[in-house]
Image 1 (cartoon, rainbow, N blue to C red):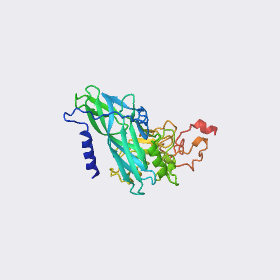
Image 2: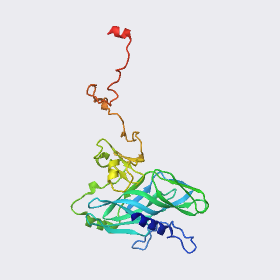
Image 3: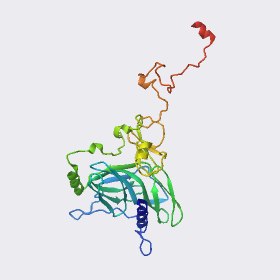
Image 4: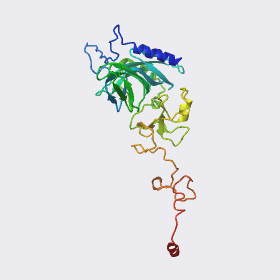
Length: 327
């Protein structure tokens, strides 16, 4: 099954950097490529789709790098979503099961440290990167330099490991993930022109850009008044609602509660809460309120909803006899 293949992939990655003495490092810098003139460009690797870890927390850790990256992609033609497990030096080459369009995905891992939050670059053809799912990371101890592999690191949660060398506590965490499509290489650009076709579907492309709204402002077909998407910890994916999550077919346990959410008006990911977003969007306001609505609300209590707090306001208030006499 897929889980057994994933375990074999993890074991292969863990033994990849070990030599005869087991002292070789798993963490390797992102190599620079030489141009046609033979000169090495220090920014030549800055292409494809960049994965950046925001609000990074490193305690007792010097550097971090992907051991296995799990990303969610979308077909450029039919928009079919699929998950990819990427390791160093390996790429996925297959055809879309729906439209039979060829797609290629390859990871170039970068070294994450206090002054660099870029986790790597993904080169894609025939598809686009949507989201980063719980992935495996190599952690280098700040004290002894020993490397430890942390499985399925979740965003928005502080994770701890124990160093395999000096047994010190290692703490790692990050909040939001920024996925940005950069200027692609020449070969990828040519392939993009070939697959573009006459039917342009770029407007349906999903890319979380802070400051821009989600598709349909985050409104779901099951909840017309909901303006946010939810991220579930079981699979690490985002869905418009819990019903969409259960219908996705990822094999998650029904009834799992979401721990993070994405605002439908500004696309900012945050902890799950019913508090108002910084952009002004409101979530889970509770009772139906039609009294104010910017000064144009309903004032007739007979037409107000029974859930409106102003419908029965003042009905149980007592009045003194003196006030009654004045009436």
